[in-house]
Image (cartoon, rainbow, N blue to C red; front, side, top):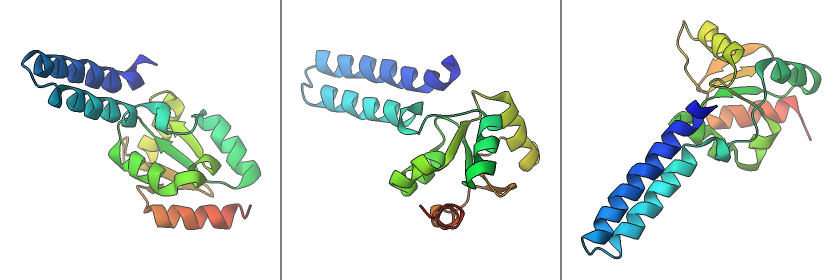
Length: 147
């Protein structure tokens, strides 16, 4: 659990330290702006910007029932962020699995990517696709669930 929060916490602590130093040196505008930038980076690298993760087993069960794709991701992955933001409101219709929280999910991703934990890995109808374009995933989502 702590692993997913390590990067955001480090960003907040280091950003706060540098901002405090800037403010102490007299930069009353630069310090708060620097802190704001690091807070934004911490939020973007946290699990907060993704829909709630489920286990790989639960994702497969749900996907079998509703036909929606499964997205394997991890916090801090810029490609996962790109996919998440490109999907916008449709992201909640996907099944998101954090590979850092589920060892079974990490093993599935490694099996699909020659031993590498490359994310995002998207499973559509049982077939894994590594780092697909967001437009492709949107088309798969439209095909798999018309609602």
